Length: 200
Image 1 (cartoon, helix red, strand yellow):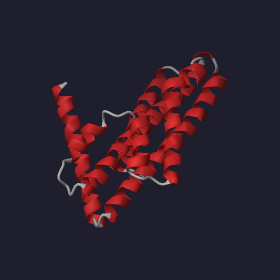
Image 2: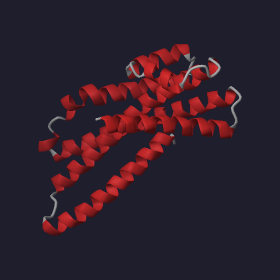
Image 3: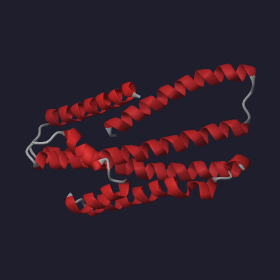
Image 4: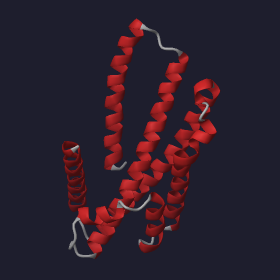
C-alpha cells in the first residue's frame, strides 16, 4: 500500500477513534437514529473515496517525477517537476503518462477505470444519489456504489506507486535508496504543507 495511503488509513483510524469516543458521550444524552448512523457511514465512504482520488493524482505526479528526475540525471528538484505537473488535471496526467512514460496496457486500463470512477464521483454522483436524505435504501445503494469506485481508484493508486518504485530500481537504485527517496519526497511534501498552513 502506498505510503500516503497508509498515512490516510492512520488518519481515518485516529479520526474514527475520536469520533467513537465523542459518539459514546452523545449516545448517553441522545440516542442516534438509524438515519444518523447511515448518514455517517455514507459520509465516511464518500470522504475516503475523495481522499483516494486525490492520492492517485498525487502519486501520478510522483511517477512523472521519478521517471523524469532519473532520466535527467538528478539535475532538477522534485519540487520543480511536481509544480509543473500539478497544473494538469488527472485526465491529462493519465493520458500524458500513457504515451510519454510508456505504461503497460494493464496499468493503462486500471488508470482509465479509475479516471472514469473519479469523474463519476466528481461530476455525476449527485445527479444519481442527491436524494439520499429522504431514502434509506438510496443511502445504502450510494455507499455500495461509492465503495466500488473507491476500490478501483485505490487499486490504480497502488499500481502507480509500485510502478514508480520499479522504475527507480530499474534505474539502478537500491532498496535503501528507494526508501530514502520516498521518505525525502514525503518530507518535502510535509514541509510544503506546513509552510502553506502557517502562511494561511
